[in-house]
Length: 426
Length: 192
Ligand SMILES: Cc1cc2nc3c(=O)[nH]c(=O)nc-3n(C[C@H](O)[C@H](O)[C@H](O)COP(=O)(O)OP(=O)(O)OC[C@H]3O[C@@H](n4cnc5c(N)ncnc54)[C@H](O)[C@@H]3O)c2cc1C
Image (cartoon, rainbow over all chains, first blue to last red; front, top):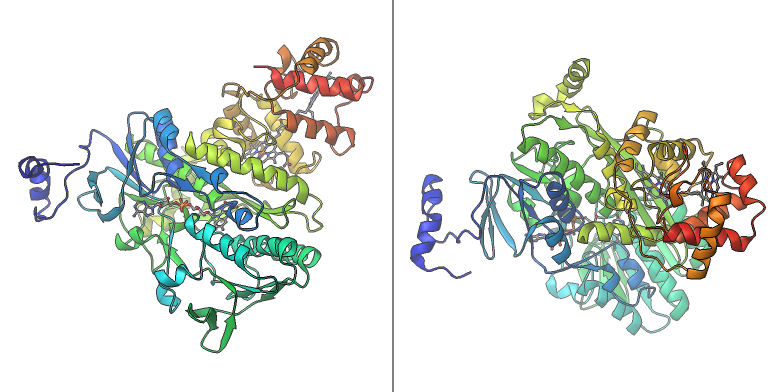
């Protein structure tokens, strides 16, 4: 985008003046807005679906989806790659070209750096974009202030692999390079965090790799939580049946500091644990852009929202979905983000057409692999009650405790991934 | 009107916090969209073991959901999910999926089996699975273009006794050989 100074002033002149903002330093408008526009930030589990369903329901609304990358790599199933079951990340990678073409979504590859809720403008690395309504699905960022010593350099030594991509590849390479008889250390933050069963599926998949390739090795899990945060009895049984002597699970061990030079993690200043491979899953909060826009609630971490519209209770006109939101009983999962995006899209279309809102109805399901051929799941149905999202009583639950369905669920889980990624990319 | 009043009363406590407008109960689209994360957009499945729901008849969806909910039909996950809905939700979901056009799949099928299946279906299955499986009598599910691995899985469940086969269907299935059944499933999967 190159603009000379004269046309730049012409573009921003009127608007900037009216809003009383200084014109100097303001980026050029990237694409002039028509009658009705929704801007979506983030092209992951939530953002792609919000963009798509708004266009499916109302072609008169222009949708601009802004994502920093030109592709997206799924966290779901990335643990199978780490465990050596998937050869590469290509089955987990989507592009946006078909989604954009099929639904007429304008996809912009740029970093969103600021949001002006009063002027209804987002600033990106390529210019500004105005909106009537804004949907944020930026996922998570890390609360590094709560994990001393865990800076960008330390992440290259002790990967988190909690955002899929190079970090995921790094963790697998480290496991492959580790000597047999080595120790893997995995730290789990206090709830809530992205994907409650995720750390335990990760543990299972690392143990699966060790059992097959480095049988003298073990994995020490330091969990800040008092017990396994999701599907506890199922993981406990799965570990006992498959990985006895490999997994050393230690609850109520909160890692607060790391020393990447010594390959140690420190538990509340009291106890050092050393690993040959160290996988630090740091404490998390809403993606930085949501924090910067003043959307996080009293907990300073997650964004409170209206249950039917997912509109922020802090800023009108901005909707927050996915991991970044505080969606009541709905957990921070890809399935939730998908379901929330559709609820949000339905009611954004209603709001922009002056129509009555519809009560939300949502679903979450998370499959977790225990071995390469067995998976267990948690499922629930959600509804709005008294202004909150609650799980519908007497519904949902986890897989049978005897693993009688685990082989079939591993097969269904593959089709789930295929379907949800196809939803996001076509 | 009564509905609206109820909505307002429910939203009362929230109105104090933020401007929450009253809302209509979940629409067929709202309910059905939540299923698409597993069954595909509008019920068109891309995953070969997950059944497509698009163009499924309302009666078949309602019947399946009720049986999942009661446990009469075995399931890995549908039973847990079905318990979260009422019969009228099932009607609404069925309404939505019955209006979607058939999700045509291009699957690996065996041409010889397809041919054999085509010759058997008229006499054995067509009474209920009509129009080459594009339609179904009463609550008989649509099978045209359904994923073959899914159909095979369901047939296994029937034959092991875990899923209860309708009596009249059992009469037609019994005399057939395993090869005949397999051919029929290849046929239905191939219908576009
Ligand atoms: C190991 C692991 C396993 C998991 N397994 C499962 C599972 O089996 N099932 C399940 O349902 N969930 C699973 N999850 C959880 C799932 O990955 C998340 O819940 C989901 O990705 C949340 O969606 P989202 O849209 O909020 O964020 P994301 O999917 O992370 O998308 C956010 C997008 O926003 C972009 N972005 C952020 N900020 C900006 C900015 N300022 N400018 C431009 N772009 C920006 C990012 O680049 C990213 O593409 C797993 C997670 C992990 C870590």
